[in-house]
Length: 76
Image (cartoon, rainbow, N blue to C red; front, side, top):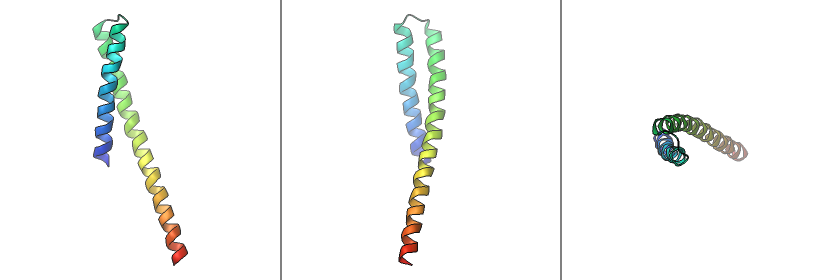
């Protein structure tokens, strides 16, 4: 699951990088400024997606384990 989250976060970060760079460029900013801001945005998004993805997976796994424990205790 970690490989999937890493791949997803990298893809989303790459897309965000180019979107942010193009928006800055179309607004007339210097290309170096666009690249710098887009890089910072992509790095932040990468971290957010990794953290949020890991939290979501842990919450889902915990809920599944609790549900399984409830089912097991009802039958046993």
